[in-house]
Length: 140
Image (tube, rainbow, N blue to C red; front, side, top):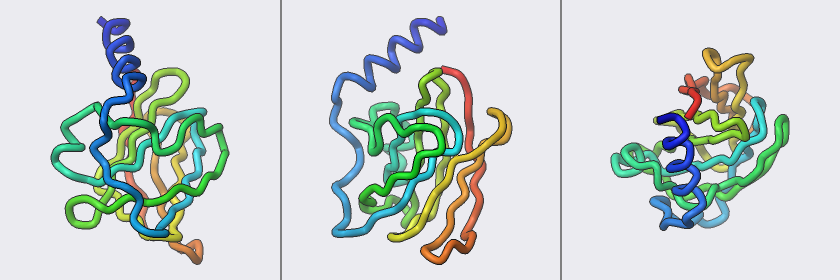
């Protein structure tokens, strides 16, 4: 069953299905810092449709290395001006955070010593902590 799920998720990620997110909003951008492990990352509008699907389209950031920092355009926000963060790492670990507030110029850092303590720390353009979100993490 586990192998079938991994195969299904791999096929969905590789199929190039149409993404459920919108184009970048003007020149808005955020910085993403991967403090966990090599992974592909999706920053999506937090909508009911996006919360219920595993068809995210092409990764917002592909192959982000451990401790790598990258800037990426920020798509239009979802319900209530919020975003979803989705990650799948090289070991097929799935990471998920919902209801994340992001603004242009802000930074989101995913970190955690183990799967039970992964967080998404969001700071503003001055480095001031805005909020820390719990991140669900589990093996596919």
